[in-house]
Amino acid sequence: MANQEDNLFKNVIAHAKEYGFIFPSSEIYDGLSAVYDYGQNGAELKNNIKEYWWKFMTMLHENIVGIDAAIFMHPTTWKASGHVDAFNDPMIDNKDSKKRYRADQLVEGYIEKLEEKIEKEVEKAAKRFDNFDRTMFVSTNARVLEYQRKIDDINEKLKEAMGSGNMEAMKQLIIDLEIADPISGSRNWTDVRQFNLMFSTEMGSVADDANKIYLRPETAQGIFVNFLNVQKTGRMKIPFGIAQIGKAFRNEIVARQFIFRMREFEQMEMQFFVKPGEEMQWYESWKEKRMKWHKALGLGDENYRFHDHLNLAHYANAACDIQFNFPMGFRELEGIHSRTDFDLKSHEKYSGKKLQYFDPEDNQNYIPYVVETSIGLDRMFLAVLSSAYKEEKLPDGSERVVLRIPAPLAPNKVAILPLTKKDGLPEKAMEIMNELKFHVRCFYEEKDAIGKRYRRQDAIGTPYCVTVDHQTLQDNTVTIRHRDTMEQERVVIASLKATLIEACSINNILKKI
Ligand code: ATP
Image 1 (tube, rainbow, N blue to C red):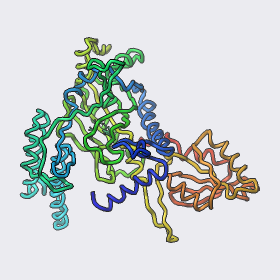
Image 2: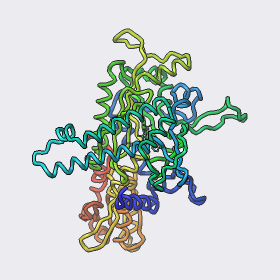
Image 3: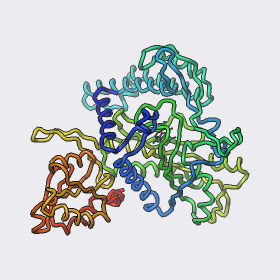
Image 4: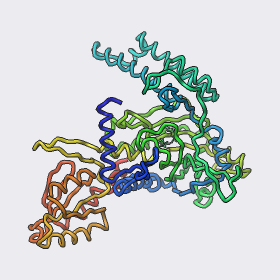
């Protein structure tokens, strides 16, 4: 991470703590690694993101319904899903720095550097030639071709080692590429070991192996095991989807990037059940829909891109990520996977229960194929927070930190501020608040100078401030101050409700999709 981005990220993290968005978990005991608590403003923002997702899935699609499955599941679930045997990350330690890494990420970091080299060649050439043709250049330039050949070769070896679980081959790759510890520069590595990411605990009072259960590492399996329950009780016809928001747990090897990689996090997943053979068209359709959902928020279209998976998971026949431009660069925000019939088939096998759909149109039974969209709620939170955070120099020479959070997601929609604490202004302000609070989330404050109060609201992203002054008592008007432009206008109190509902409604964003 370049220094400037590094500093920006640090400032965002500090701001999130100072203004009640995110606290380290159990901070009085010095925190717990990669576990965080959401504060009073964070919880509101998080709930609004959930609402935006949930409404999009279950209200805008008449063939998608939502469920809320338990975190604990029968342990065989995780045998069937492949997580007991294959939900491993390859772990490696540097003997000198004592730092732990994911071996595959070290190799991917090496590939990223080669890709950066290609980009540099492209940039140089683009400056040199008019009518520069990128496709032509990358397919003919000797140096670029050499880098690309190397990337393909490494990818092939990485895929082979990961696919077969050959950890000696993984270590050999790190040695052959002369990959050094990013911190110490040392190449003194331990062997690579497989590390299962699932947390386990015991259920009941007898702590033997038979009682071992897992904290779910993904919410999807709660949907798969309920597939027929929902289909039958909801009389659902294929294609249809089941959506869910809930906690997931992964004992991540490296968890150093704030809420980007946590050990306890939340997922918003939707499994879409389709007729076998039609999965690719639904995969493309969900890619497009999800990208539209993201862009409708207005965080900047240039901050998103697709990234196809080269190494497919054991259950997938196509997969890609929607990456977001986080402070540390483009990283996965959401995964879109064509999961085939792997999960339902496997649950059929392990449970001995039929998990098939009777298609009345074709008059036949089949196990549906599944296209899933899976987004981390905390990563979405970080995307919103980090892109909203702005340090601004104002025309009068002063500075402010403002969170330009899209109004429908902001923790508070409006702050009601009596200019002074006397002359009946607080009473009038409360009267306004008592009317508005049933429609939008309000914040009331009467302490400190008005300028200071505006700054505090900027810092937590409140899009509107309503100021009650002496004129209000005479003509029932107030000033409304806009967070982003800092402009103020005088409006009649009677118009506030409609204006605020219109500007802060999640439906307004949904209508753009
Ligand atoms: P990564 O490659 O970053 O580890 P993944 O491919 O393992 O992610 P998935 O299993 O596809 O992730 O999970 C779906 C989504 O859940 C991800 O796109 C991400 O937004 C979120 N997610 C996964 N792991 C974490 C984590 N440890 N902390 C926060 N969010 C996570």
